[in-house]
Image 1 (cartoon, rainbow, N blue to C red):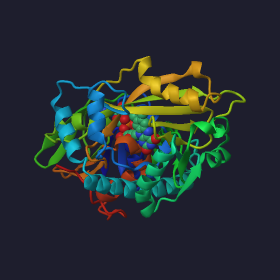
Image 2 (image 1 turned 60 degrees about the vertical axis):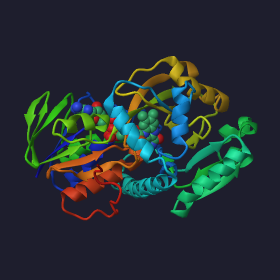
Image 3 (image 1 turned 30 degrees about the horizontal axis):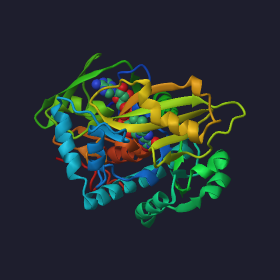
Amino acid sequence: MKTLVLGGGVVGVTTAYFLAQAGHEVTLLEEKDGLGLEASAGNAGIIAPGHSFAWASPRAPAMLLRSLRGAETPIRVRLAPDPHLYLWGIRFLRECTATRARRNTLVKLRLCQYSQRVLNELVRAEGLEYEAITKGALYLYRNRAELEAGVKKMALLAEHGQKQEVLDASEVAKLDPVFEPVKTKIAGAIRDLGDSSGDSRLFTERLGALCRDRLGVTVKLGCRVAALRAGGDRIDAVVTSDGVLTADNYVLALGVGSPIVARTAGVSLPIYPAKGYSSTFPLKPGGLAPTIPGVDEQWLVGWSRLGDRLRLTSTAEFAGYDWGWTPRDFNNILRFARDVFPDAVDYDRGEYRACLRPMTPDGPPILGLGRHRNLFFNCGHGHMGWTMACGTARIVADLMNGRMPELDLEGLTPRR
Ligand SMILES: Cc1cc2nc3c(=O)[nH]c(=O)nc-3n(C[C@H](O)[C@H](O)[C@H](O)COP(=O)(O)OP(=O)(O)OC[C@H]3O[C@@H](n4cnc5c(N)ncnc54)[C@H](O)[C@@H]3O)c2cc1C
């Protein structure tokens, strides 16, 4: 069976892996000159079932309103004459009830937990190294009231299988000495013991090389997908910068490019970019750097140590397909990092970029078949694509191979 996987991020490459393992003749198309160079290269690196909360929550509308009035909120919107933004925004607001937020969170959690198991099996089987740290993740709180509210909020995940411990500031500092000099600045943390971290770009690149060298996957770099060519209920071909290519099956895994390409076959996918800011700093020799990944719940800055570098990310800005950034966009990251990790890295040698999360309004990705019998979706992973990639890849491969996925797909199939 000939299969074309469109997109060479962590989602496309993991899909190519499971399909090639199942005997498909796979070709993977990627417009960049390397694999995993978009969102997969800029994320915070946290593999975090413990961070499965849906963004569309009862708190979100007020935050968006404050951002429209100019406040520096972690989730922001920039109004633009783009009908897709408004359509997506209406659907997002509809998901902001307590009932829907709970349901969407639990769908995401189930998928994240499954995906982490699949990732661990894959890594064991293939011996892949990706700067993994498996000591859990810290969700950091600055005052007692917020910590208590955090414990209440996190209880939902604990009830559904996440092992957590609540730590006061001294216990946090005992666990990770980077907090010892700054422990008066924090009230404590919730440690999710099941979370971990790793470099998703490195993972993608190494898995891509394994796919090519051991599983016979053809990787076409520098190949832009312009359109799908549909005939009735099938996709007949894809139009690319390398010409028109055909296969038996197609997988759409283009991250934020997915809805644009889907539209060429008359398919509307509710995915919109949520821009995030990502910075990477070299560790300072002899400095005190974090050894456990985490998220500061006040500034919503995520951090993780990727080998001899520290990655820090923040912000979700609904501003369309805009990869631009200014130094000001990194204010909250730098304010947090200099305050809490003052001696960790060389702050003068940062690498900065913006990248786009492919967000669905409800949160879970879109998996499986829509109205074309040979076009499989694996897109819309939002803020959790590194965590969800291996699980969703295995699910899509199972669906294509006519096998029942191990996971219940309620809430994950294409949604109108
Ligand atoms: C700031 C930030 C922090 C994040 N932190 C985390 C985290 O800590 N943990 C976590 O689990 N997730 C995190 N994420 C989310 C995660 O990075 C994404 O969900 C994930 O990378 C999505 O993977 P993808 O393969 O779908 O998309 P991408 O990595 O963007 O890959 C899509 C690929 O398709 C290619 N492409 C697009 N259009 C075309 C076209 N027309 N033709 C050919 N190729 C095309 C692109 O070049 C790209 O390589 C974060 C994201 C951001 C932005």
